Image (cartoon, rainbow, N blue to C red; front, top):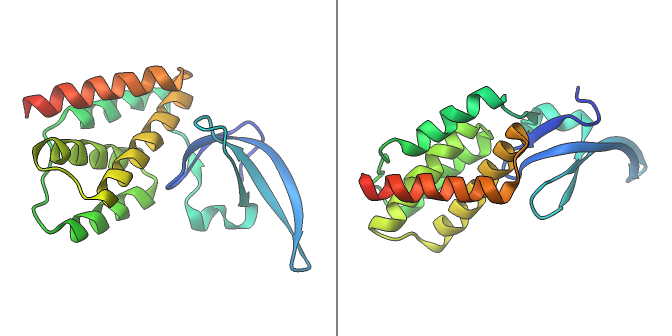
Length: 164
């Protein structure tokens, strides 16, 4: 169970703060929902309280683990030479876990592939989404402006992608 003000990650959407707890009647049934405010894009999401375990809602990582994310981004990319469809599915599985370290691998590998060979349209969208997920969680974890985190990530990714 989460509390108001908790910073959490909603897989495939990124990190946000639980702003309120609301009850809504849908199809004659009253359910409780967490209202999650996302720092990027000022989006709000409603997540059924009784479904948080199934969707993988979790607390954001501790600030001490952020360096581990940066470390993954600095590692050599792992190129999957299978067709783009298989790569896309494999990366989607990683993204759906909501695990920031797996999302960092997706960002690293897709960034490198983009510089070397280019990406399919679906992979380009996935890369944008994965970066946004990283930025939202790191920015909440470190209490740093998301623009600063975005710039820092871009510097790490672009510098290391050129050195691989």
